[in-house]
Image 1 (cartoon, rainbow, N blue to C red):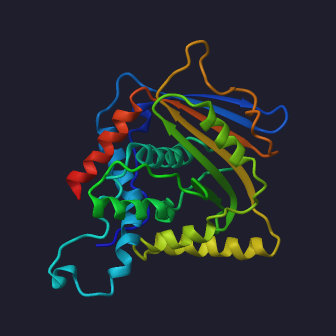
Image 2: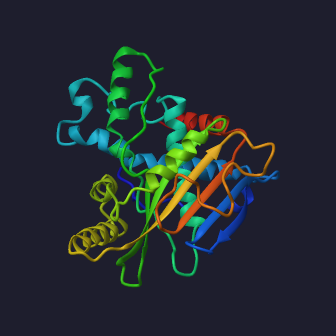
Length: 302
């Protein structure tokens, strides 16, 4: 049964996360947000996160199944094999942390990176574009070898948009996300280097339209597809929509000599664009355990 692309609501984020915001407007607007876990966490947040993450991957599962949709039911071919078997929970830890980073980036963008002018919305996640992961998953299923390393997905890590009262897109947020069990200055640099690229329209804009089609054809998907198509055509006619940048860095290691890995008042030296930038730094000491536990639940639900 197809489900809507509209995300499940998360009501318990404030019971899990503690945010410290800094803003520098001396040149271009730079926000730094430091996130820690709270000590007294409502355990129901893990159920909400699992539901949200599982939903975010449902479109990719449907994309894996789509080539066989017009054939006879698998049971008519004497098999009950699911083309989406193992996705995404059978992929390795590095791939799962990558997925987790992109999803948390979307959640933070929607719930916390907002002001009076921007209310960011993530229409859908772009996991269906990770073709290498699909190919590696098929190889692992055929060889029964589940330890292969999956390379990262190219293109946009995530995209968010703001719409006016008529549903027209008026601005977009380019998201780059990294998630590591320790700390890596290289990952931080990579985020800011990619965000610095002089790209005025999302490179995965058309892929996002396809990703919405992997879910149910309902009012939510129809309105977003219409808005994204209109944006593409209007932008092609030299009516650019303003771009904002967003770096999400989740790490399992906290700095000892200072409070943050990334400057709270000055953009990273590798960020050379002249746009508004929000940099979110999430110190999550048990990130490996959290990611493994959340994705392991999918095996029991498949």
